[in-house]
Image (cartoon, rainbow, N blue to C red; front, side, top):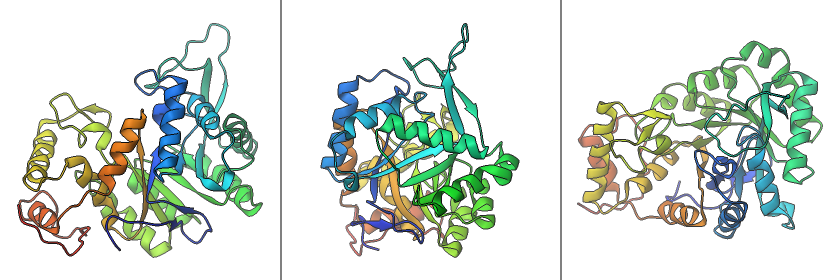
Length: 338
């Protein structure tokens, strides 16, 4: 595989293709801080202009706000000009009188609540509501979202409902999205899964997906989309107060992130560029989706994605014990020294 990867990547055995770099749309739902509708539109349109036209969203993101904003930004765009992914499992409803909202990290959101629903009717109703918020007739990819605590319901009705939608041609690719790679591996083993979205488990700091999920996906022909390449912020800026998996960073992990940054600096490579490139070393990985809350962040991610990274950097990370010697590396055949 050439690095950085270029051109469309096919998901599993489907006809769905995605560019290697996509836009994660959780920030459009006011994740952690408010974002104006205009800035949300500018963010999406910058991603489209720069070729990151794989757009990943979910009802969970701002209880529907991210889908509404994404739909507004896409209005008037040819449907074939982008690949759209959303998720099911959480069904939205209006807040009851006196019911307090549950923000779950989002702010200034519509007055809605989330409810788990894995019934056939619930899956269909959830997708139909997403299509209405997005202003489209169909999406390309649908994931069952964060279902690690609901596997009996998923196996009883949820996945069958999604597979039925695939058979009917309503959606073109189906799978699961979560940050539990072991659960994803079991689901890929047992079910006919086209693609999984694995967040934060195949990064410069986390190799768990390499042990369980990635081999199984390679065996089964299931594509992997990686999210959380910066481990919720630590690999973007390894400061003392940086989050790691949405929690305060443990001191040993912070120390390792800073060592990674120091090695990258010796080669003139931003840590974020290395973090974004590394997951593509495994052949099961088709794409990455990276969240952005502004056009500037989108442009930065696009530039980082194509940053020149010499092979010597990866070899040095292995030599200094920061990457396992058994891990695949995204080598290009260039050998610049520090």
